[in-house]
Amino acid sequence: MKTQIKPAAVGALGIAGALLLWQYLATGPMNDSALPTPGHAIAELAALLATGTFWADLADTILIALGGLAISAVAGVAAGLLIGSFAPVRYATMAVLEFLKPIPPIVVLPLVVLVLGPTAQMSWVLVVIGCALPIVMQTVAGVHDTDPVARDTARSYGMGHAEILLLVTLPGAMPFIGTAMRVAAPAALVVAVVAGLLGGGPGLGQSIYQAQAAGDFPVLYALVLVLGLLGLVFQGATRLAERRLLHWHESYREVVL
Image (cartoon, rainbow, N blue to C red; front, side, top):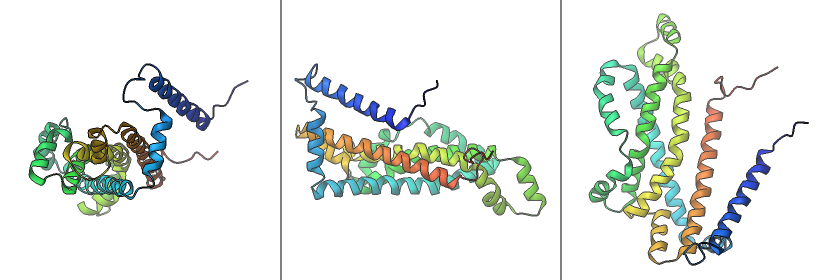
């Protein structure tokens, strides 16, 4: 008899197992280290939830991550459509983009901090740097994957370049753009936190740095728990948005028997 696996139940078991492992490490092999028990970290998290400073830092982090991601999406999709659709633009920019692709945002963090200082603007710029390039590259790939027959048909019906770009090429590239956004959303959160942790920008990253500097490790781990939960929310929201926007695509259509 075939047993049906329930993902939610298995996921709950996985979380319980991770907490038990954490408890074992904190009370066993790492008893003398700065690792608190899960109960201690969760108690600190409950105390943090009652403070206005925590909510202000959380709002700053979410605003920087989502704002930077939105700017990256608009600029990245526009640039990707332009680069993917016009050969001279592609030849002029692809070498530069390939050069920039392996450079992580943390490498340019000291330069951005030097120019803008430990400010929210610095964090925004880092998030845009970290998210825009993958969106550009995926959009270019999506443009190249667009059905050439659909483009030729649109051209034969007298549609201009702008109409073909918006009505044929952009919808054809949407699955690639959706994948890029799903990958970029958690990255935006990570970069926003790193900008606060290492660059002094506002948000939870700065709170983590202050907790580490003060040796308040239960608060530090409580903030790490918040970041983990925030990452799950970002990932889930991105998947939901992708599914809603691409409901027409064959990979998201439900099969009707």
